[in-house]
Length: 426
Image (cartoon, rainbow, N blue to C red; front, side, top):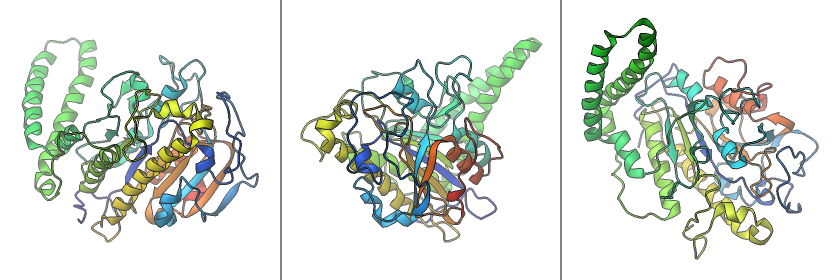
């Protein structure tokens, strides 16, 4: 189906950005070039560990040719991607490794610089970019999660990568039916409208009775309610366009893991395609949730991804299957974006920076260095088909700064960045 193209920039189509987050890191021997024969590390080697991966000492850029086993599903689209290795995350001692690697993945503030939090957690990249490209979309950002667990074993820091700011979560949606109704249901929109109208009416009456100081605080609350009203106005204005989208409401039934992830992915692509949002985050699973998953088609019984990662020597084949499975879901979405033709003849993927990544370089060692990152899409503004091997210690925030500038954000620095990654630019 052709893109509706309802939100456009000067080029005729919107710029979009999406992040596909994989929990627990990857098995390095299956993912990273040159590490197939590396010794499997044992135990937690610490968060300041450097040079764990046996990288080519000749840092630089070369053509991405033969793909590793985990990356093999990318073969058909490898000219659309860049493999970027050698980038590190910051780590603030004293907080949980898994929680910090998820919640701070898109912020990575310098350690001990953010007051009032145990995490180096600041406003995340997606919201900073949405300030630039989301002004006319009904949803500034959308947050998708493929955590199908019913238990709430872990805190919100294990299950969310998108934050409005320190301590202010942008909650993700796990249920495909709930996400569908949020995006396309006019019934839910009408209910929100009724509630918002009542709240605004009460707010206007109350505002007249407040003193100056209270009025200043109340203004922030009033503005947030008005933002919801504006969002609904934009949704209502798009009703005619949204009616053209052929997307049935998901059934209330158990879905095999792959079908569930792909359904959530289909909803994300539809939202980006239709102009409901230009910025999305997509967590393929939560960090350190020991409740097992039934990875349909991979194993004959439910398995815990986190539990397996700490027994990598014995369970390496199972872990490699999980890594490959996650990559297949990413490729499914890449190809779906590539099949969507925009108003100017380009594809949705051409106009989307779509990044695969994890907050850990290896799940068994909890290392924050040498992370697995793949950047896809971007069309003519990106030079693709490369393996970009960065010098040891390059902050991941350098890539986020580069992407933010590609999306039109005017910033000189992001988090602990030290510069841009020029090799990805055409």
